[in-house]
Image 1 (tube, rainbow, N blue to C red):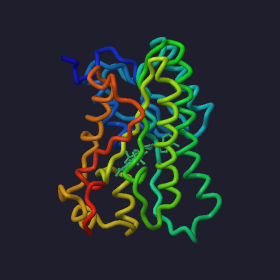
Image 2 (cartoon, protein in one colour):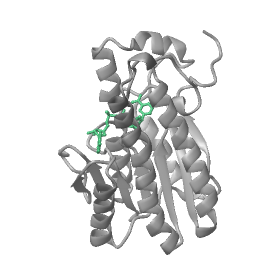
Image 3 (cartoon, helix red, strand yellow):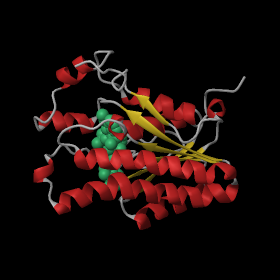
Image 4 (cartoon, protein in one colour):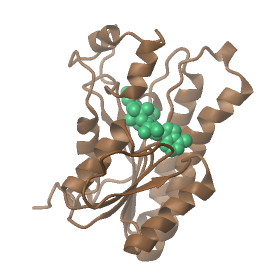
Length: 248
Ligand SMILES: NC(=O)c1ccc[n+]([C@@H]2O[C@H](COP(=O)([O-])OP(=O)(O)OC[C@H]3O[C@@H](n4cnc5c(N)ncnc54)[C@H](O)[C@@H]3O)[C@@H](O)[C@H]2O)c1
């Protein structure tokens, strides 16, 4: 029987790991004996045992490469890379400035590619590895006022599918995690701005609730485990049935 938990000692790099989903994923791997490099543009409090913090901008290829180089220096490589850093944006299309568009695409799309590329360079050479990217229900669905966000998240799914095909023969698996609405700062910021109403979101979900960061981390851990050995190129929702629900 293949184990559904990750092996101990995995070398894990997570971008945007100071808070929210990235932090939950980093803590999940650390709790399973992983050595985790937690990358973020902000300081990171209360590092889990065995974790390293690395400050940088996950949209900047040089900063991303520096984070991977720090993992190389500490552990001689990376087994699992999670391209998690991302920004929410609920802005009507007619109000999107070129600067804001480029800022969203630069982190949510370009940064994910440069993270996957830095991971792929190492993993293809070592003949093994797992790359996970944070997509969204908006990798699949569309929504008003989210043209930039939906474009980046759909693009991430397409990018990961292609990398999965390109690197499968080198023992590297690449998947997209597609969360629904998860209770993190990203969602509370949209609530504080009056841009979303969580009671409406909960009512739209078959489970009648938002998700927790730990529930997304659980999928990341599974995808890095031996039980997921035949899963690559997939977009896996963790959304309480949100995408399945066609009713209003
Ligand atoms: N929360 C949700 O409902 C939800 C749903 C679907 C997908 N996602 C995706 O999951 C990922 C994480 O979301 P979250 O809810 O945990 O967000 P969050 O805002 O709670 O946390 C994001 C983290 O990324 C860091 N970060 C932001 N910009 C960065 C940059 N340029 N460089 C390095 N770090 C940076 C922040 O400092 C923070 O620690 C994002 O890609 C998001 O789009 C979130």
